[in-house]
Length: 200
Image (cartoon, rainbow, N blue to C red):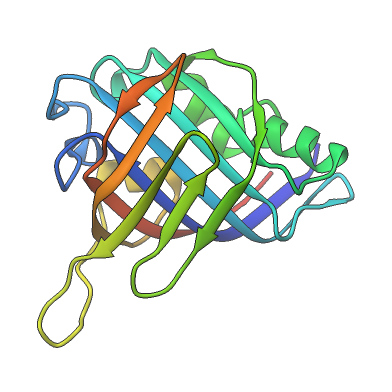
């Protein structure tokens, strides 16, 4: 059951920048509900001997209220370049079925998992990071910052502890749209950029 993954990640949701759910369960989502994605670009990792470096995973979800209140519906999109072994391990890890942080976290906030799908996923980093899932959606993220080029960062928010994220960059994700028959159609605005390093 041993696994570890590390790399860069992006969160995008339907709230205005910045999503209130990051601040804890007492803050209402801007529209009363929240739809979002979590995109994971795995730089290094393995699961029971299966190398996961270079794999990409995007989780798309809908919550009827604040993230912390749970009852979410989710689907995993796994990069179609992954082998059958990699797809199996990634689905087990990112659905929380393989223990560790995600078992407790997603076990608390997800009640329904739709079948995972293999899709062409592109993730690019730089001044304006992008995520694209073929036939599902895309985002162009523009990090907030000052005139000197220093990016706006946050630490200490409640949900950062839940995801074991120590710091994140705030970004504008308005140039994005997403669609899934089980999750719904939505456009995003709130966006955050971070790193992850998890193991079980």
